[in-house]
Image 1 (spheres, rainbow, N blue to C red):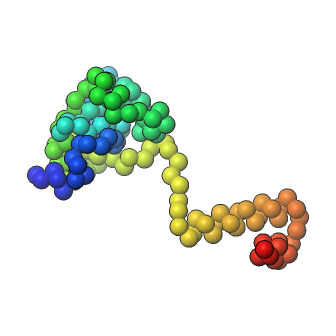
Image 2 (cartoon, rainbow, N blue to C red):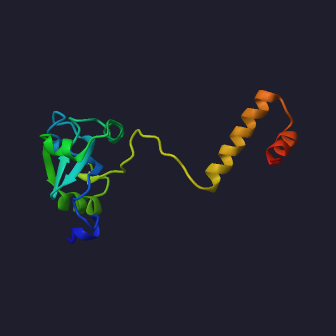
Length: 145
């Protein structure tokens, strides 16, 4: 397998945090209980970060640095090559270590035209409720400089 096609061009220079399904036989820091866990990819190894934080959201909110990760003693649960291969060959199979979507509990903000339009609509609705003004009058006031 050519890992270069799945990793950033600078390989492990960055802090590669993700989320994976960890099967029973690999769950070292969670008392052999399988389930989703935050992971760290470094030097071809996959580290279980569940002892640091139970979710990716917690890791992001804590602002964990690469230096803190390097100083930690996190269990290796497999190789990056195995993780990628299992994710391709056995997606969603709970018997294998495989990648999951990195989002767990963090808020995901939408962007684009639909988000902006709906946000403006909500602001107008709130203002109309507060002022008890008719929609046409309020829109006209918004359009004035």
